[in-house]
Image 1 (cartoon, helix red, strand yellow):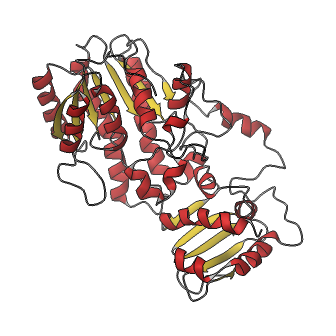
Image 2 (cartoon, rainbow, N blue to C red):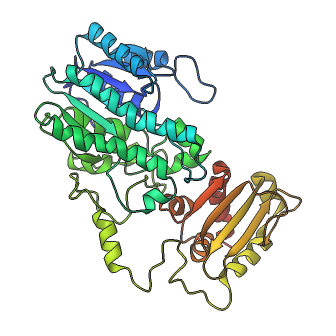
Image 3 (spheres, rainbow, N blue to C red):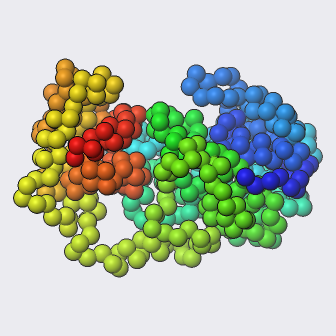
Length: 430
């Protein structure tokens, strides 16, 4: 863990989405220095599924040694942003730091994303970030060491990160484009940077997306709080950077990353927008086009590589590995599997031995095989037949397949996560 230095004592931080999760963690880290925190979030009344309100967060900030100003702010409403900023200036005398953390997510394809979800992501992620920055900037320019920090990723132009959730990617890259533009526009006056985690971070949102058990593959919000603290205590000349939390903390001398793990020693799920093969040490974007990793991949692609749908270049043996895999699965299904899972999985496989296959772990004693399931599927998974075999023989984790774009999921995401637990039991038989 990165120790506090007291550098943020007396500084005023305006943090959107600070009632829980990453925003609250950054607030608490700054509060331990004796900072003033504007908790700008929309949850005033307790949420049925999500913990925390602006008032409970404010109480925690005060208990940690900071001063808190809870403000009801839905960043979709410009007047609410303006009111909160004016109240912050009146209460604390100015604003030194803005953290654009509020974000909306829907990991859905173009045809599956409702217009209201598109509007939500564009309004919160892009427009909200832009307007909050615009409203705070006149006050930030008066500060001695002003910073804007956006929780957004490096702009990786590998199509893999667009194809499964195009609207979400556009909205997050919109936040990153604010960094690119405003860092240059206000160079020498206000530092503007982006921060993104190397791995999945355990938050209430992650629980809703991934279901129970996902937390073991995540790190705590503390790692982002430490990385944000490190950025916000740097001089304003440190600007225009797209920072990965672990990379920065290693440079700062942090060696023990187990302290940030929910389950030390458990494999961690990489976060979106980071190619697994890329060395994320470069914090400045070298170019504003395709990532270097993607360019190298394109150069080296040949007959052995899979095509965009994972189908081309894969050679199935005559023994039909997919059919053999389903034969083994059918033999491994037990009443206990059916009782504990209660889900029907449909697989749309491309390439050799492709087509529609299913695993029914809901009806009677369960079944598996070729064709559509006997009842409507709870979750439909689309991937190449080659990747399917890898997944069921333990060579490819479902979460990794999903994060890397090899697996597309429609339907019950929590059930899809359950599949990973099932696989560990199937693998011994495959």
